[in-house]
Image (cartoon, rainbow, N blue to C red; front, side):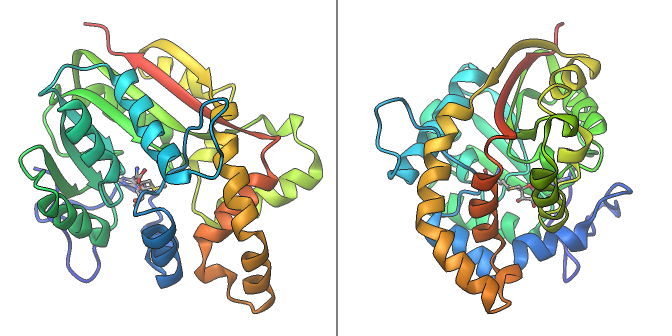
Length: 299
Ligand SMILES: C[S@@+](CC[C@H](N)C(=O)[O-])C[C@H]1O[C@@H](n2cnc3c(N)ncnc32)[C@H](O)[C@@H]1O
């Protein structure tokens, strides 16, 4: 089994397992556990911890609709029949899992390293009467104590960027899929550093450290596709979806640029990393792309 929610440390599994070496659990706890960060995601993002998808001609200000649309894109790329078993690698509070369960009839198992996320995910699924189609457990997606071929689909919604070893995480997704199973990865990637001006690199590197995004150092817009095929997948589609993501980043930047500047002046910005993310991702927008990779484990 994958782990029960840990105790005070949140890092230990009921089966005695430990997170894989290289994992910065304390750093991730600092990112996701600070009250300001949690308040930001609860109030502003209605608990989702991902960006949104806006179609041409739609208003950029409707960020919650954009988030639901992004989850819809994921469901359509997974393209799995009702009742399929799917792994949500890095589920947060389970917003995506519940959307896929409710709208696409999928049976989703979410794993996350933050015990407080797993607890909230379970509570919210019970409240939404989706306990029969969603399950949540503590776990490190680099190494899950689950049998090979357990899932028809695996997805990562803005989580591979946290992986200290993305190749290993992809190999684990490959192992966990049955032959014919489908993988969808959604998230940002930076352009190769050689194509990035020094000023942008000077903004990017401290941002990656602060948000604990080692994966974003291990791959770029160019190398993520080869990493997916290197793990044994057949790449079905590599989509640069930046144009669909930009409206949400623009809207959030407009809302939070000034509050974030004030918090920085007060020396409190580290407690509000969600705000930092909305502001700095926009400032990096010419050198970061939002990618959607869809791949198949051929049988
Ligand atoms: C940006 S949030 C996305 C959460 C969720 N996918 C969503 O869209 O709401 C990234 C999540 O990945 C989790 N995470 C990071 N590294 C992980 C790992 N190695 N194994 C499992 N979860 C991880 C974090 O705890 C966090 O909840």
